[in-house]
Image (tube, rainbow, N blue to C red; front, side, top):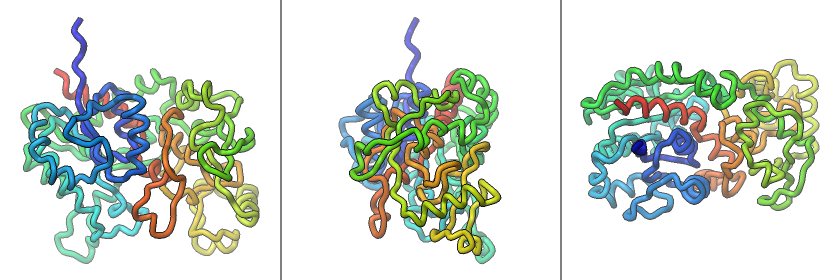
Length: 407
């Protein structure tokens, strides 16, 4: 029997590789990935280029971090030569300018990268497109102040339709697909008009979901506790191997949930501690505050801010005590946003990665945190994970997109 053809994908704005990882697990073959940040690219490179050999990287493109406009300017003819050879271009521009959790700055220069994305599609002309961004991408800036204010999602849709694509927008909650996190994202699927329609994408996702999760041994709804109950600090700790002066937690030996078994895989056989499971240093005052919150605060899962902060001795802008019995709120790049559900500490990078559905073998690289002016240029581990697309959803999307391509 002839070997089934591998479907090819280019990952734009790839970050640390959550989308590429899911597509790899779904059987796609990467051509290359474009990510401008050196920290995030190092994580992607270590896991998916050097370890899994996911990409059939072209000789003309150096295997390093790249800014998309640099690639458009330097290699237009090479990109045009890919026409007819690329099944999918996946990924979406940075979301910070559109995020409802942030300041939503219309003048944020990163917002203009959507037009670079459209230019890339024009040059390469892939058969299909998978575009992802935050839900705020569908809202206009200052719609009450400006006549004719238009969401950027409309601009992308119109631009892709002019290039000959049928497009279908969706807002999808990843928690409905086994991810232990309430994370709604704008997902746009495009298909070249001569090939077909994207209308069936979400229907196929739903139809495929239960069998996919059952094959993984997972429930359809996985709680926060299902994801990280084996990563407690009370399991014991050892000096962190990659963070001088800090301590990392040992794996728990209690009965594992199906989700924890899937995320662990064989990794604990070679590593007694999980990658990036280093605990933050906290002052005695903060530990006392967190201990009191866990013991006395009447509600979990709701952000504590405003006047309540002073009442409970909270010095930071706000915090949410996580509820172990439901899915997590949306994981962000700020480690201080959430308090662990039963220990007086913030979450580790590995716990955030688990909630995002990164398996433990996927090692996160470079600094854990950053601050000050370096926030504008560095993407440390917490931020890499907070920015990512959950691989568990990306794998399901990859399976469905292959079905849509195959006759």
